[in-house]
Image 1: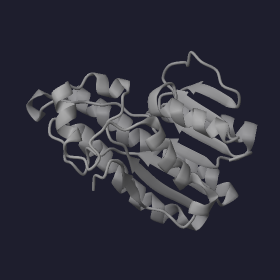
Image 2 (image 1 turned 90 degrees about the vertical axis):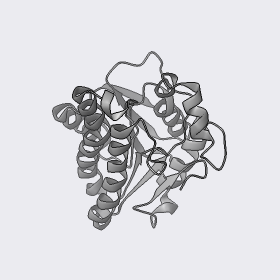
Image 3 (image 1 turned 90 degrees about the horizontal axis):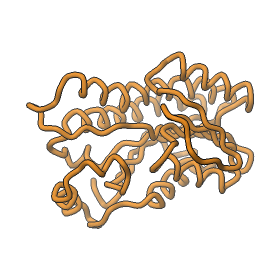
Length: 233
């Protein structure tokens, strides 16, 4: 990735930070964004405070990337929030927040990022979904619906953006030790792991490995695909 420009949303911690570190180690110029500032620094990394649901903020972010780098080669839509409640216990406000961040935010960043990518007739977009989609995980109806929407969005955008040389794929991680998981009861996690082929928690390396593959130059013939980790299908 020497000399390439990559954008990772939700980069302050967890999977997002791991992706930033991975891309920087491979020689890319990396831009990240989150709603809060980061408390760390890394050579080759630039951070922006931006809410992915804020259209003006995302347009300003892409404008800054265009002015500084002139292009965008890789986009990873990692930003997302969880929401674990039974249908009867899910307030509308929570449902709207989960849908807006996980689906509409992803759509917005894809749209604006692809505008920048098409100028160079090449690009790699990877959207983060979850194994909760194929598992139809009970207790997470709105979250699963939003992430299923990400998979559908990925498939459609792969067709719409192919003429510009842009590939669009998705990765569905298993549960990983992040803030998103800390509010989930341990017995619920064990039930989920029991439904995987590999019955363990995922790691950041599991995710960065697949994202790395999908964003490589050699992966230009792969698009519209979703790879679920842990042997879930």
